[in-house]
Amino acid sequence: MKKIAVLGAGSWGTVLANLLFENGNAVTLWTRNPKQVAEINQQHTNQHYLPKFQLNAKLPATSDLTKALTAAEVVLFVVPTNATRSVAKQTVKALADLHIKPLIVHASKGLEQQTHKRLSRVLAEEIPVQLRQAIVVLSGPSHAEDVAAGDITSLTAASADLKTAEVIQQLFMNDYFRVYTNPDVVGVEMGAALKNVIAIGAGALHGLGYGDNTKAALMTRGLAEISRLGAAFGANPLTFIGLSGVGDLIVTCTSVHSRNWRAGNQLGQGQTLKTVLQNMGMVVEGVATTKAAYELAQQKEVEMPITTAIYHVLYQQKDIRTEIANLMRREGKMELA
Ligand SMILES: NC(=O)C1=CN([C@@H]2O[C@H](COP(=O)(O)OP(=O)(O)OC[C@H]3O[C@@H](n4cnc5c(N)ncnc54)[C@H](O)[C@@H]3O)[C@@H](O)[C@H]2O)C=CC1
Ligand SMILES: O=C(CO)COP(=O)(O)O
Image (cartoon, rainbow, N blue to C red; front, side, top):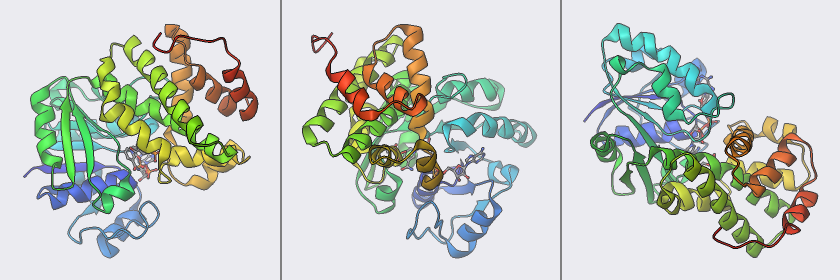
């Protein structure tokens, strides 16, 4: 049993907080939105992010960060990628004032827009080592809606410090939630971030009316790109055939729960990116990560034709069908090169 602060009450933070609570931990869920706090504490629901889900009536929420962090042994960050640095900055003073040195975990999936950094690096930069223990990344194929329904789910806890990853593994495991460990933090975070880009592509193909062959081709060649860029940053290529690679790619490219897939689907049906993002009401991580991935690929001279095509559509208003045609007209290649 541990004292845990979960920071972020979107769909994923809410479900993870509930799961950790029902696993017997003392959990406090933090959100900046006082109305959401009142709803969680009084109705035990979070209608905007998780319609129909009834939370454990004893799970407490607060908008007071210091209160959430009091005596915390584990702090779980689950805010969108581009909010992680600012939330980490806010925790630092509280950690110092409270004289605590918790384990740090994050379960978000993206590359920071301005710096293109992975989130474990962002957290390591913002939270000094004297205020924290090791950092663990929790990732894998896991839509909040399915976990809320008790669907069997497997994830990976990645850390350079495997002993700490094992602590986190034990905290989350139960009859429907199985966690593996992995020392390859780079591979796990790159797989998690980059699959969102390919999921936008998979949704777009669906919206345009393409069939299963096309989607399988996109996912497979998308995985080749993810692996190439990840390897250029030192990832173990085998990580990409694991839960945070192909596993998460499959679920995000095929599930109607995926915000990235749904955004792509609507783009494929002819809606503008602006309208799609306005109507989603939740984070679509793949949009910012597409730009980061495109720029990293240029920097590292890694070939990422699908990511480049998606970048053209999202950031240069190029036509999706023309981009698909251009991809198909490239010269023939060796598959494993
Ligand atoms: N929803 C899911 O099924 C899964 C989501 N994830 C990842 O978890 C992360 C969070 O996703 P969701 O919970 O789905 O997002 P969401 O869009 O459902 O909710 C985001 C939450 O963060 C809060 N927030 C946004 N900006 C903030 C800021 N600047 N400061 C403080 N709080 C802020 C919002 O108020 C909201 O409570 C993302 O990186 C996503 O890729 C990972 C696995 C599954
Ligand atoms: O990461 C996820 C599932 O593993 C969630 O994907 P979306 O952000 O596309 O909903």
